[in-house]
Image 1: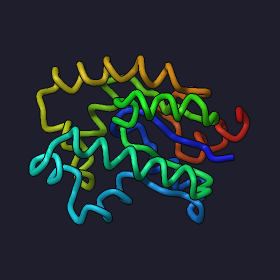
Image 2: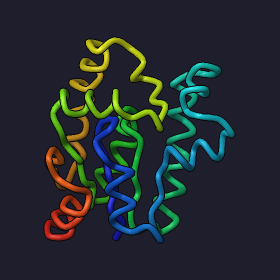
Image 3: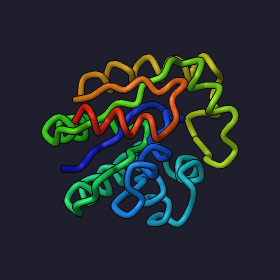
Length: 162
């Protein structure tokens, strides 16, 4: 059964996914960037978040059907009701949870990933976080607190709980 990792930006979805099963792991954001031929930040600027969410939806559906062991979603996967409904049906949805201050610190330190929604003010990012937390909790089968844990510790905890 596929494990689907959800959570806010910088929650550790990609890092935990790679630690879980590199062979049968897919990072949806990386897959989308490959398909669209640009970074997500560039796509947001050139097109829109709405267009991105539609592409994300299609790539997500394909990934679910492709038999990956672990899927790391983007932080906004829960924005669309269709995605939330799909997540609820799938099971094994793991919400990687951390408090806002921890996540915001990780976002600021992460120079590798261009997070388009992180270029807003801290207040706007915190508002987005507050909106999404409810959605993550709504679809999650398992909630794992990630603060202070290594990716391997998180993987072990997921394996024990699923």
